[in-house]
Image (cartoon, rainbow, N blue to C red; front, side):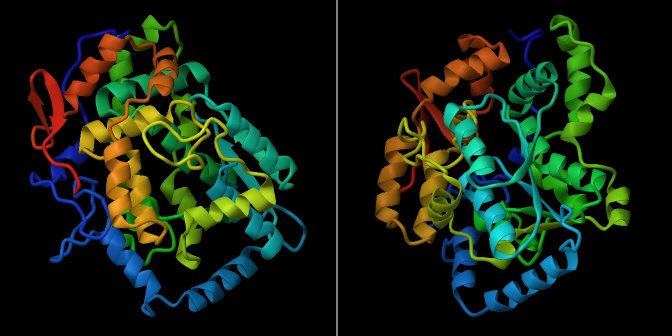
Length: 402
């Protein structure tokens, strides 16, 4: 239930969205994706970056030599952990961890931040990664009651119940590195350039510490905690909140990070990023399995982001907020990778993007303690006028990819 009446949302990413909706002429991505840009020919920044990667302007042979020097710099001579790898047991992180250990001779400690609600296949893949792949591993799980309250409030006020999850995914491995005196943390891809976003990060090896908050998050934890206290959520759920409970969701002090010389790097800076190839690699080397129940709600894919049972609601809200959903995201990068044509991508978007995630919604409602009516009341707060229109009491997109 919602403890107090809704107030206007706090989604800051709406402020910079173009009022005229356009779609990339090469893929199917919309210009409503936050921070994406389009060139004079109508090509999105993600497609432009893909062309750049395939040209001689980015020397991946040279970058591979950079990677070797980086790993040599950090490789332990005493068998201690020398790199932290955020790893859910999914295809991408499993591939990175396996290559670091078995191809490059590193000794990774792999760390998973718990999703809101695990799927059966997610737990199975994580166990397979640990036992079949052969990895040392830690699972970081926040206070479950606080996790639910934060997820609920982020959904109400930003339309994104997984921001606490995302914060933990980014922060917990870095905290682990600092606590264990490990100087290297290796993440996967830079989503800002692989899928469209802030082009100033194009040649960055990792996210600068001072850019985390403005790129990855919608509103601060402190703002959400203030709402929880003022609106009585902690009292309503009989929860005794203590400030240090937030540490698991937050980066360590930035000055301490700089002094410690902990380095954040993206694997995709050094190696061309192909999610489908990561799927085949992880299947072969760590026993990764696609979703046995078939495709994920809202898209046609069955092997990406399948560890969280509430994930499909996140992507449905992306569809509501920005007018494109998970099928658009999946089709866009598969078009860039040459796995499907744009025509096929358009057909997939029309078929799956607007699908309501019935099964995920059932789990989401129980997790957040929201009613169906409350859910739809919140949803409508995030429908922007230049994206949606109402005809015959039905919401319709003003523009669709063609």
